[in-house]
Length: 404
Image 1 (tube, rainbow, N blue to C red):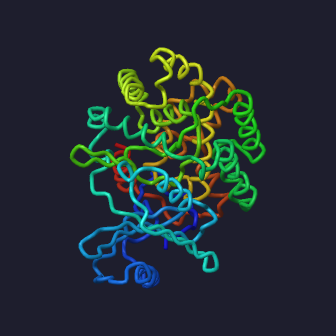
Image 2 (spheres, rainbow, N blue to C red; image 1 turned 90 degrees about the horizontal axis):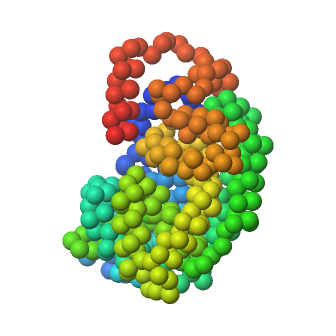
Image 3 (cartoon, one colour; image 1 turned 60 degrees about the vertical axis):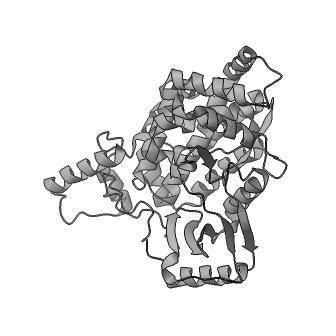
């Protein structure tokens, strides 16, 4: 399974993601035996060759595999830490959401004694919009918003509340509290944020939730509806990876879609999205279009603060789980989201703006937000030889290419 160890050194200044998933593509003997044992219990007529199981992706929470059986393709997710509740959350969401707009659950097994969790779903053919591009998604905005409303209308009774999701994000504080002193010192030197600062920031964000958040219409919020989680085939669009789903106000969910898809880069795209969503929505029929827009604007600033709470949690988790210089494409994405939210964040966090800048810009090699020698000294690293100029130039070129 995937390596969960954090980055052990600071020398990778130029953030070259040589192994962005922190593991090899080859499936281990343990994985193969585990998968085959599980599948034999599910499919009585299992017909497989060794070549049919493939690793699709790997993250901190679970591994994803594809496999063939009787010419049908499936997706299998396996977690060795069921307590993170990612797969159980996805299962609850997929049970609620129509198969017309999402994957279908074939089997879910949580072996609590063994500490292993399995989620088996149908394989959805199609190309994600990371590959196709945002212009094509905008072109298909009518279909996309219709499907989004379909998801919003799904039963939310089995999902956690927005307040509980908010509290889950705050639990990142516990990871920092359990970190060793060296890791805490490295984080503080890179960002000028210590554990007390992190607690204060979450406390202020919670006050926004308590003072201003309300749910006019409670919907199933996918919460991670980025381009890679939207598939397109012919005229059909489907959504995948519901493991971050929760209940939320419809206006928060809509703003989060705009944020995740970076539609905020074009006021024209935002207007089109809101217009198409309203015209296809069964949930908003009691409102005029202008009333809908007014309510969206009234709630926008509060929702932007709440979006930042989730973003702040994500980058803190990234630093803790992967380190400050791995999976740089994710970190570059966080920078863009931060830029969009920054004007709002500065209203309540003027005293932390410089630290936020350091936190989000750490991955950028051309912006020195920390003293590298000081970090090496804290880490106990002694350079045996200097990085030569050719390597530096190559690393910068690779980094820029990865960022593009």
